[in-house]
Image 1 (cartoon, rainbow, N blue to C red):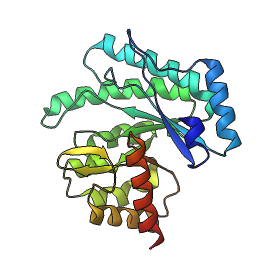
Image 2: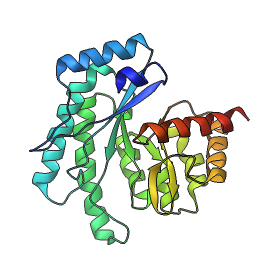
Image 3: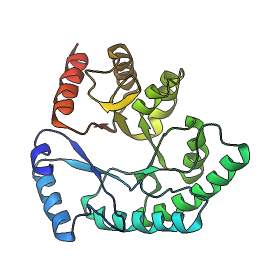
Length: 238
């Protein structure tokens, strides 16, 4: 995939995971090869940290398991000089009590501090908005001085009426955007299948805010990728 994509795009998201039964972690030699291919094509990377364990779990063993796996991945991929490591702060949902949210936030702060120590730069940890209120991440990001990974598709699928305001208020602190189509309750699909009007508004905001970070097309097959690139090019050039 890196050989195919590096000549045609500026950044590749590596989605890495490690469990007791399966792992897609590259070896150190493979990391060196990936770096060589990318450097030859002036391509960079973002690294998505694992999601099989919850970073904000109430279970201390699960949290530590996540931290250990994430730190191994940070160390392994550091030679790629990634533009960011993307973090899911799993462990909370819509409708959780104030007490549960407060405890989850304490656990997440502990986790994030450990990952910052491994990364060496707090802004290289990019915390992604998930299926809970966007503001839940704000205190963690401000306290730890991390960056946002703004997943616009997650805001669209949640039908968040304030998504435009959120974008304008957070793009200055955002290092990575995840962009994908949303339709009929399904996300991570081609932008061609999504809401064209919302996409046009979003790209206008990106242009007006002079955003200069990474935009990742977070789709998972070649057809969705090609279609999405065509849609973005058409809107951007017009």
